[in-house]
Length: 249
Ligand code: CA
Image 1 (cartoon, rainbow, N blue to C red):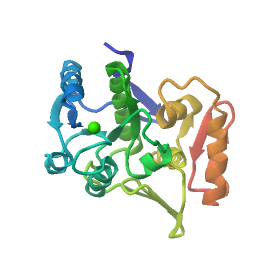
Image 2: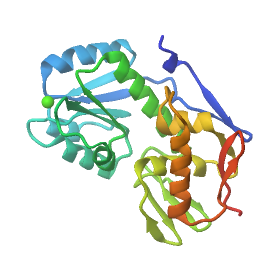
Image 3: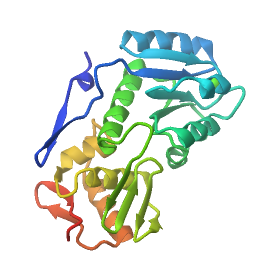
Image 4: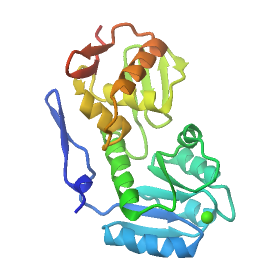
């Protein structure tokens, strides 16, 4: 069993929340036109315990029943994969991992803005893919808190409004333009106002479970958030521990 699949919980100021979904198998939609890629991929994913449906083109993908997770090849015969991502995202918050071919122009920010949660580049290993799927699932589960999968997920904290479904943020009803990471960071802090999130916990949730680099990037993003939100004093640094969002300030 992969370490990333073991049950895990995070404790924040009196609440314990499971970071992994329930035990029911994840219903995964694989959108891939190349049968020589799809076939071994599906077999491998099934072996990992996923309940997999194959969509060989965009039309089938868009007509498919709702799934828990979408793995989306960008190069599809009938419609651009990016457009498929946008159409799925327009009606659902289902996590999407985009699959791109090496050499395809790749703008990560653009991918995230079209609604993708992460991406993998072909050729990729099954272990890498499964680890990414699990990481996205944990991240989504945590940052959405108890929001329903179909979507009412608006967090209102005084002057601040965070819409987890559309990923929009506003202060005093004026929309604030955040980068994807700034948004994820804010969504995490806002999921439990007043609670202190440790640096490790933030890095694991917002960046990567295997993050091993400097955590300076966290402080840079916090500084960016503070500046853009202009809610002086709301985001507090707890020395030697981490950060919290306190809307009572
Ligand atoms: Ca393809």
